[in-house]
Length: 181
Image (cartoon, rainbow, N blue to C red):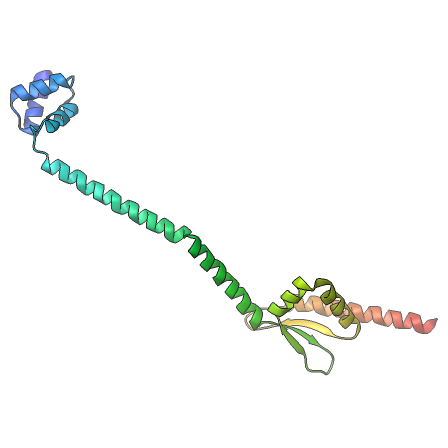
């Protein structure tokens, strides 16, 4: 574009005289955008429409950033949110542990039912004595199983049955060996 054309474009865009447009373009090395900004700063151009558009865009950006921060806070949460999630998880585990039971039974007797929560606490804090008592119970003819609503314990109960059968076999072999001597 030639200089005369640039002057005419600037005059049409910002409604200034030819002398003001020429002066602004000369001061800005014939850059049209810089000339418009130069004229706005000098107060020669009313920029209400442009400013309004920029302000609306800035307000929208601020609102979008607030929404992003809010979404980020909802996803990550603060320390209170994390503590709340931990307590919710612990509550679910305790509820499931209290609904389900570890059963100890002998042939014709009523089974002893202990909640899984208490069983887990005993195993954690009294591991050696609990393990010894479980093994002694196997050799005394007790059988173990897990029962409760909404959960399938067939695999675990099959393992308990196999262990009790193995204990019975060992007990019978020991008795036969003792009686033969």
